[in-house]
Length: 451
Image (cartoon, rainbow, N blue to C red; front, side):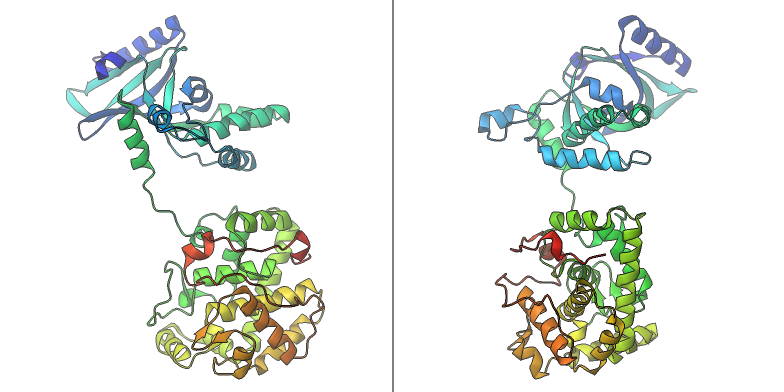
């Protein structure tokens, strides 16, 4: 069946292959591009580098409808197209047109093409034979994996054209992308190929910050952990999603991420997409002066906290060889500061101070050194932060804890929330749950910290 789809043309050397493929493409008016013939098990495939314009010209969408019958799903190569998801990729391209990263695509041959190849080089069988693929202008390939990126590329071209951005169009025109071409008549096997390609474990949203520094919220988080004495070095566990009782780390990276969310928006419960949308609206980009101002503000705030509160100051100054034993002692005596809730409460106080435009915020922060942060302190039970033998993670507990210590140090919050909210608790130690579970919030743009 493979031979019915592909005409294999063998050549004795590279020059003969290039001449023959070029002549065919010219005479027949075909697309042509270099490729390597690879084998995975007993399957033969083509691994190619294809100009974006050509890719868009010969690919064919074959998507199921949003409400599809089983028969339709079985006869379509692709799942329903999520236009919002595709437009996210379009926006990414437009924002990073100079240096985009476009992952590889998978296509499947369903109509005849020609593959010119050289099986031997200087007398030796080539493990990965070099080839030139020739595709007639009327031929179409179906998308196995990458339909949202192809749709995003099409929309990016449309947007560039509407904006009169010829330079952006030219950059895309000069862009080539990696494409794996399978040769498979059985659509069920193509469905399995898509399934196999999708079996990757997503990073927790908080850990994405290490890599996705174009995202202003994640870039801000990285700036915070790299420039705060409390979060530096091995004090942060960057990979775990649960804090082990024997962990030598002071906080999980996810806990610092939740503190950042609270500092910017007043709470940790915003869904990821909404949080990043608000952060982008507030800070624009990492080159914007607003970003620099917020970066300096959050770093200054957490460094001021570290200097003002004796336990934080000690934790920040400990040599690495003493981390493990001392941090275990903190947990044994139940120091609220060294929990996800305690860190979120401190971040909420910062949100309150800057939202109120408190000019003497450093002096207010200094007073936090007088607070008894042991879990046994009755104020934590009275404020709903500690319930029985556990520390609450509910939004109302974070707000209540911040209100309690603001009262204790004699600072009046002009925007104090009246009454607790009824969101369910989430596990702040669980990066996946914290990042993906939607919590009912109704904060407006006005609730963001003003710059």
